[in-house]
Image (cartoon, rainbow, N blue to C red; front, top):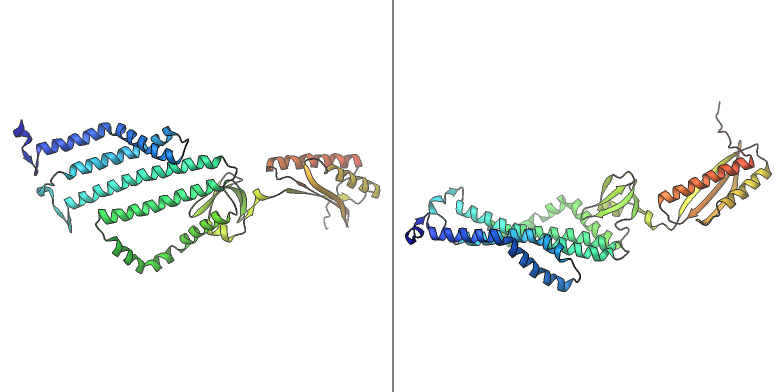
Length: 356
């Protein structure tokens, strides 16, 4: 039996293959339990920083990428103990099969570890979002979403640099020095993206609007759904998505409808010239009483002008910043009351003048 395990196949003994295969199978079978145990240890560390967090949510989020990373780590470590067969190490251009496999293994290991870190960032952001939801201010939620995306981008950039350094064996310092030569050209090509990134920081610190605010910008009216690194996403009144670059959100005139202190409604009536002064006076006084109600903060009504063929009566009233549905319902109620008042006063609207 020992003679069988001592046999050399492709520059390695059968015993070495059996040990490597056993390690990989062991990790493959127990990776779920090991990853859950390690996730539990990691949860204890996280729980010391953030109290009252959901253990199950954390473990469910981390177990899968952690298990994949452990499998890749132990598999690569075990395979590294084997001698690569020289008869399989064929030359390919300026490299060989062994170097290509080593490069692929390094890339897979870095990518799997990056995926684990991305999941941890997602969980930390989820914790902070739950805490931010307890406050009425939406600025915290806005900052969490922004910095979550920002740190993810930074992490991916670092991972790419690690792949270039340890996967392709490139000198990062000389590469960065070389990139500085074409930095001006890259900055010029990415000028719009850089401007949008800077504009996103201006939005977060200047706070002209936050997530959930209703705004009007560039003839687009809707609610802010997300403020990203490059653009702001708006849900319009027609329930469509409009994506506006952050630079335009900063450079354009943005009307924050959620910050209004009241809503204004105008009512203009052109009364027929056949109306008497007594009828007009009674109607204006009745209209003034009509728009003076508890739901209206301030109001007025006047006979503003006498034009050819009609008397122009104008009323305006201001309400609290209620929803658009409540505002329209109030306007309908007042308009119907005005029609009844006109019927009681026996007034008619002027017929529009049509030139012959």
